[in-house]
Structures are given as structure tokens and as C-alpha cells.
Image (tube, rainbow over all chains, first blue to last red; front, side):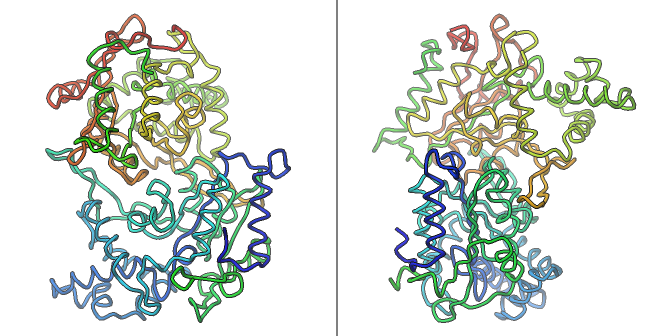
Length: 309
Length: 309
């Protein structure tokens, strides 16, 4: 277990924590029902550069819409999607991380229109097909293979020691769900994320659920602890993230009653993955100040992706 | 198993369904991951008369508020709480079932004020203490003992056959959670219900979650399938309810792809529990029209409560 991890202090911190947590009678013992571990997804369990996978999926759909309806071609976000204007799109994310959400709203408006009135079943089929068949633009491997092997091993390791793992992502819940069981061993009911509004549409065969053209929850920052507690009814003891949006979730884990383990993934491996700290500056400062475990992709992971193992 | 059930067609329908669902290779086989069973709580798993248990809890708190603050005593819902004006309170529920929610709003306003800024941990302690120590006004037993033994047996029976059970209640999620594991074997993460808004409040010890003076979700009627799917990512195959608010959940279960089992509890036992159909009229009509299994408390249950067994 954890064979894709280098034998470094990060790996040691994980092993030490888990051994103490399962040591019955020990001062840091955590009963099984409280062994809740939450993981951000984009940039923590799978790649988020050059853009979140989900955004690729959405852009594909927006571009298709603009092909069918020329009136959309001069409007954002359809224009950027059709013209593959990654500068505009990347800027939306960067500006979001720095507190400017004006373009996020433009982008979200397009996204919500793109899937409005679609059933959850159709959406799940499209998302699954995208993840299983589309390739990452620079890494070359299929998107579903852009998961970090050491993190997949960590999920299994925690489960083997009686932890229950959840995804707590700012990404779209229903985009991830079709594949999380296969790629992470995390079933649909343990995927927490952002979501569009849903409506029950009755019919003669029991009805179906369809998306509405409005957001329900944007699961980032202080909403992460809220959604984690709403779903689990418990305060997690283990949390892993990689950006400023994960700070409340990381701070919330464990304290004040229980020992906690907080992991922050540092993207510093230009060769095997990507190197960036944009959007993670504050979380890296907090990690230093509060003694979180920073996981360097370059130094702490022997292997990043399963297909290079 | 199911020993508190009489040997009647209702019990037989349950047993037949489950045997077919687990029969590998059978035409009605349901794979384990799809064996999702959802249960309403008030009036389906525990008593809801003369008023929902949760309302007793809330009234206790509202009465305490009115004791402390005389200006509240002439205002609803504090006045009714302090004066034990059950006629007004009962009317709120009855009028809700008939489509008039004006007083529901008045009541909800009071409820939300009653718990605003309270932490989820404090609320859980108060709810648990209430359920474990307060007695039902007419049945005499503690509220936590007002659960229906045949339904508790049914939950265990389904779990034994590889089903995963969830509560999908219009009642407050966080009111039920402290006791559902003990009384039903359903852990907190499988309790879906209505909820007040929550806010993450940061502090030096990892922060806490506190209630806001606004509703987040009212989990009734067409919201039940929405919340069930949002939580589980699956369409249930078994659903049990007892009122008009459960119709969409019951219709949604199973169809169109899978065989489903739909149970509607009929309160027709004035001697051992209560006899009423108010708020269930339409669901009883649908049960007849769509061949749901109606469970008569009087005829189908040998024992209602564990302490009479």
C-alpha cells in the first residue's frame, strides 16, 4: 500500500496518523464511525490543468450549441467555446480565485442553459462517455486516467483502516459520479459537489429528474464544511485539498475534539504533471502556519499516473 | 424476521418482492448497488399524531423563549406554544395538507428564529435529550419508543437482503439524526430531510457550523425524489410513505426500468395507535389506481410498538 509514494516525511505523516487513529486505547484513537475522510477532486485526485476536465466537457457542449445556433456565436461563453479561446476561459478561473466572479456568472449562465431540461440519466451518460473517451490535451492519456495513483492508493489505504472516504469538490457532482466508483472506489452516494437545480417531472412511467437553468449549490470555500456536514452528519478527521477554496474544509477537519490529518497537494512537477501555485497561495501560507502536511508531487510521489508505473 | 407482521397479503407482497429482487438470473433481479430503499419517517417509521414529534420539540423551545421574553407572548407561534394551543397548531398542519401554507410560514418563521445561530452540535444534543426523555402525550411511552416495530423489522430485513435503507422525510434532518442509528440502524449519512440553512463560522479551533434563520430545503412532495437522487445518485426501488407528500417518491421508485415495491401505511388502528386519513386521501387513491401495497396497521401488524411485544 502507498507504493507510489516516496519514503518521505509526507508519507510518514499519513502512516503515523492512521496508526495512531486505529490504536484502540491510544490517546489519539478515532472510533470507526468517526473516521470520515474528505477529498477535493480537481487538482487533488485528478488533474485540473490546463483547465478542469469538467470545463472541457462543457465547452464541447457549448461549441455544439453554437454550431447549431449561429446567434450564440458572438456571445460568451459560446464564442470562447467555439473559438477555443482558452485565454478567456482560463482567466475566468484565475479571476475567480482572486475574488472576481463577474465572468464566472457569464460562464455559469451558459453552462446552466447548456444542460437545462436534460434528464440526470442522459447527463450521466454524456459525462461518462466524455471521461472515458476524450484525451487530455497535453498529457495525452484519457481523462479518466488523469487521476493521481498515489491518491487512489491513499483512498484504498484509508478504507482498509476503516475510514469512509468522500469526495467534497467544487466541481459538478453529477459530472464525477458516473466514474468515481471505478476510478476511486467511491460510490455515487459519497460524492459531494456543486450542483444545478433539479426538478421532478412526473409522467406515466414514474417520472424523471431534469436539470433547471439555475445553480443549486456552489460547493467551494465555506460551503464545503456545510455540505460535508449536511451529507455525513459528522465532522471529518482527514481532509485533502490543493487550493484556497479548500481552506475551510481543511481547517474544519478534526479540531477541536479529534486529532486531524490535513493534506495540501503542491503542484510542483512541470515534467510529469504541472507546476503552479496560482489559486493556492493562501492555502500554502496556512499550511505552514498550521502545520498541515504539504504533499509535493515532485518529491513525494514516485509515480503520478498509473500508466507510467 | 418480520415476526411482528400478520401473515397477510401485505407481508406476502414484501417477501415476494425481496425474493424476486435477490434471485440472480431472475427477470426481476436487482443488483445490490441498485437496492435502494427509501422511507418517510413521520407516520411511516414513527408516530406523527397528535402532532409530529419534532413539533413537540420546537414548541418546548418556543415556550421557553416566550417565558424569557414577554413581548413574544402575544405573537404566533410563541403564543400557541406557551398556551399549548394545539388547535391552532394542528390546524397549521391540516391546512398545509390542503394547500394553504400561510400559517406554515408563520410557524416556520418562529422555528427558524428559535434555533438561529445555534451550533449543529448543541442542536443535536437538545434533540437527542428530547427524544430520549420526553413522553408521548397520549401513548405514554418515550418519544424514542414511538417507532413502529414492524417497520424496524422491515428495515433490518431489507438490509439483510443487501438493500441500503435511507430515510427521506419531510421532517427536520438534524432532529432525527442523533437517534436514527440506535432506533432504526440507519446512520446519519443516510438521513435525508428538511433542513435549515447552515453557515460555517471560522474560529481558532477549526470553526463550527451554525444554523441560519432561513430554510434551506423543505423536503416534501416533488422535492423528495430530487433530494433522494441528490444524496444517493440512484433511483430507489423500494419506497414507503403514508401521506400525499410521499406520492412523487412512491411513483419515482423502481419505474420504468426496475420492478419496484411501494408501501403506503394506513393509520386505521384507533386502539393501538391512531386512525386518520387526513392528508393521505390522494395517496390512498393512487395506491388503489397503481396497485401499491397498502399496509393496514390494524390488520397487517401483530404488534405496533416494541414495548407491547
